[in-house]
Amino acid sequence: MRRRSILAASLALLMLGSLTVPANKAKAVTGKIVLGYYNVYYSGDTQSYNSVSSYGSYFNSMSTMTFHADASGNITGTAPSSAITLAASKGIQSFAAVTNQANGAFSSSVAHAIVSDPAVRTNAVNRILSTAKANGYQGVNIDFEDMLASDRPYFNQFISELSSVMRANGLKTIVSVIAKTSDMPTSAWSGVYDYHTLGQYADLIQIMTYDQNGPWGAPGPVAGLPWVDSVLKYAVTQIPSSKIMMGLPAYGYDWNTTTNTGHKAVAWKNVPALLTNNAASVKWDSVQQSPYATYTAADGTSHTIWYENADSIQAKTRLAGTYNLAGVSMWCLRLEDESFWKAVQAGLGTTASTTSPTPSTTTTSTSPTTSTTTTSTSPTTSTTTTSTSPTTSTTTTSTSPTTSTTTTSTSPTTSTTTTTTSPMTSTTTLTPSKSAYAAGETVYVTAKVTDSSGKGVYGASVTLSVTSPTGAVTKYTGTTDSTGVKKFVIYTSKKTVKGTYKAQAVTPASTKIATSSAAASYIIK
Image (cartoon, rainbow, N blue to C red; front, top):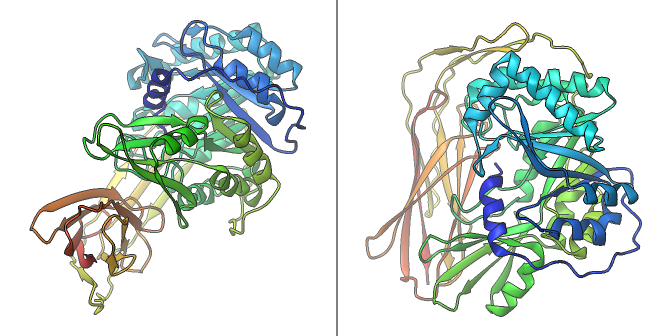
């Protein structure tokens, strides 16, 4: 769910000042991989270099985001040689990160041209190998994003071929993937990433467990703990845990909730000053294990910022121990100060109290293989339940089940998946966190969608309509997480109209479930 091009553009505009903290003498974290992403946004940009110089004892791996592949499989970019030399002197391994960016944005057409054509694939593999060897890298980090879901089998093949060649030359392959809590092969953003197959070929899988929310949507945590946990809980069932690196954000997002424009990224090291200078009201979400704040800017506009602090980073980092992961990665070097690294170090020293499922025991293969998976879901029925709570009601609507079959055929060296599903009755519940709120307090309304067996439905679209005492209607949309839950966050101010607010959630029909809805109310006083 990372929008790296959006984040990079926002951060580049900040023109953050160079770090001046002297090199520390702390002992580097050992036992886990701790990787930082290195960027060069403009000529003479030394900010990531300064992070390596000042905080290099806290991490042991670095990916330089300085290379791009074009539609012919050629590689453009420059290795930051001074940074690689400095990193080596500190015992830090360097990886050449290669993206499918064109004109500052990830390009699906570039990725398709590379991975779908055997000749272009081969050229790309050879060029990437040459780039890594010529510049003293210990491996490569493929960061292809915004790809076509239909390129899934070709991307698998590309990583298979690349990993085989890299391994033969004593080099490692890292693949960055979008975070997800289940496999939806047709999903526009995450469908291309076949966790299970990529986990067989690559040496390491870097899961981008950040950008849960961002400027493209409503305010919310950048990486809430429940979401990160659900991503990892799914990932270790598909990928050997010893190959997984989770992602940590060294930034937050600031939403202008008055104009709904001009949202921006805020570096970890700049958050304290922003909060202080704007006399922000700082709060802690105990569910998301994340801090957030609201403030009024000098121009009179209202802002909400979700960010990270030492507590939130420690809470997430502990999951690396809980799930026995290879380690953690952070986006990105230049945004942090020493307190970020101390939080990571502290988190790696403890384990969160989350039950981890049994990790996958898939072994590494250096040659393409063929796998076939067939999933069948039979139509089922269920009884409808209705809540009699005065503030919460549930309505279930069922439709006749139909059966749809989707078959995806791929090249003989890739995987084929056949899925047969049937829509079934669904139940939507809607529950405010409490019955009454003071004006200016944040309202939390939780929608949950379950199927006929009572299991939460992942990826269900939910539209929440809230009618104020004056009759004004505000709509919010979102999708459910792996537990079937979508938590809506509604911000109020001292000027919010007081009275009873009526909320209605509607979950439309899909190929998996039938339409259902629910209603609830809460009071602003």
